Length: 349
Image (cartoon, rainbow, N blue to C red; front, top):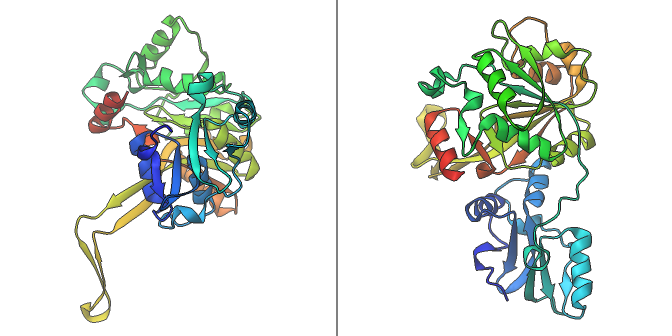
């Protein structure tokens, strides 16, 4: 049997630790055991759905394991197991004996090559906010606008647009201001031609203000993305979550944990200690700067005024609207807003 020790976890570890293991091993699925007994597969989707249900990340993975997952069995022919994999588009297929013991593991890549993309494409508009000065990345942004900073052989703007094109999105609205002429010239010289309309900000309009210029032009839910981060997430999953949950806004978040390297003391009246926690770990969901908005929200963005996405979120929340959050793992999100993050990003890529 293939060695799976590096992608094996115990059923008692927390969801957070499982998520960290996926990140460190660069995988989206783990084999879960209780001692020597195989309990099941844990996928990134299982964890994401648990977070959306507000399951505590300190809970053990055994609490959320899908006991109804389909596996292969030694009593089945090779072709029967392969057909299961094809129908499920399963990248990994555990093979079990009659007692539920794991006796083999089949991987799609070994049998069929590259996993095919069989998800339906979505062709919805994408608005990219690319008008900022990138002041935290000076001095390079004194010369090159932030959207054109290179990530490998492409600019980060191309990486972002290519990701959206890969899922079927083709219409882009690019909000520009700082060094807009350079951005337009660069994109115009590319061999690959993107379908782009430029939205020109003649004065700073905040993180969503320029979208007011699209009133009457977008009639479906649409993506809004900043231009300085990358998510390794199939945005079709986010879009489906947005529709299924009937959200007004969906925010793509990342799960970020921060460990305090000291003993933390809590006190009450008269300064008396009420609790002492040794090196506690706090977990947050952090905004990645990617959203899905319903088209009706464009009417709520004032024309020609400075307006942040947080203002729009507060407005929707204030009137009882639905603001959903779709989580991705910490290392699935890479940000280049500042020099240390940019250097880490290009090292990863």
